[in-house]
Image (cartoon, rainbow, N blue to C red):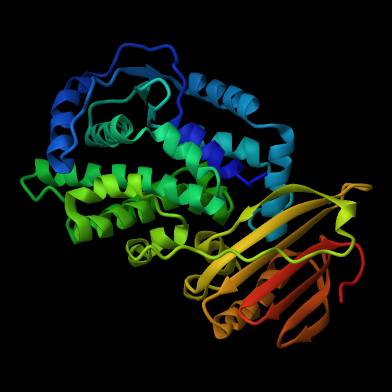
Amino acid sequence: MKRQLTRRILLLILLLVALLHAADPPPFFSEIGTIEAGLSSITGLRFTRPVPYGVLNKDQLRLFLEERIKKALKPADIRAEELTLQMLGLIPSDFDLRQNTVDLLTEQAAAFYDYNKKKLFVLEGAGGGLEERTALVHELAHALADQHFHLGKYIREGARSDDGSTARLAVMEGQATWLMAAYLSKQDGGPAEVPDRMLELMTESIQSSAREYPVFSKAPLYIRESLVFPYASGMLFQNAVFRKLGRDSFSEVFTHPPTSTQQILHPELYLAHHAPTNPPTPRVPDPHAFRTLADGNLGEFDYRVLLSQYSSDDEGKAAAAHLAGSSYALLEHKHDKSPVLVYASTWDSEQSARQYFELYGKVLRGKWKTVEFESQTPSELAGHGDSGYFRTWVDGATVNHIEGWKSPLH
């Protein structure tokens, strides 16, 4: 079972809006035809059919979120996701992932494209200003991609990989954001692309505007970054591929999707077809005493946030960029239900592995209220923390972790 809850909720809300009661449409819906023509002239892709539209209010949105999550996700899935993120140190132990995600996305909702119903929605009360019009361009860009590349299938195929699903979300949101900016540039008499200065302004705007929302501002770093990453980093990825491939880029990223967030953060790796190599997770003593609650892979995005949270932004980004691949499993003891997290990461060199290992000492000290080290050597950290006994050790270019054990690990 993959650890998909955070990404699945984001996909459900950002892209899978149900067919709700439609109120009177805002007047700017009359501009849909003009926007469609503009997007087609930029991409070379034509709208094959009209895009229906409607309006929903905040109460309808929240009700939809609650019902959609209830139907799509089992309580066991939510528990496994929370435990994994908590044991990694990415969210606090008392963080209610389900409720906070609903609150976050209700707070920030503006417009949606439902690729199941093939219908576009905006939130009730939208005016006719620039913000509402640009949101409409963004959602119509989703509709255009869906008509050519079947976003539902694109998402389902990406569910085979945690990190890969985040990369695909960045493709969808990044391309729509890039096209939104290119459309505005064209409307202002500029080129049908995104100038460097506009890229900088758009990136700053995505990051700063999100901070204006109270629920978002109080959320853990990982949750905040998970919401911003698809738009900001995805836009920069689309721009880099466009600079290399031109119009073909709009199709290429869907027909040959990136396989990792590392490819999103480093588009040259995507263009070179450099995929991650995920190592096996370390074997625990008495493995038959456990059942697997969740398993999957972690990517550069995950390690970047984890290391930045407990060291510094510069250190975290620099170290995470050397990741070659990572796998994890969340285990549960069959007798007492106690969780154990095992994961491994392979790096591009033994030196990079040791740099990560050194930074991980800061993670251990930061993510727990109390931690005691029984072994601290250049290749091993072992001891006891809030979740139980732990052992982290270096084996060449691979770093292994076992956390949450009942007794000392040797």
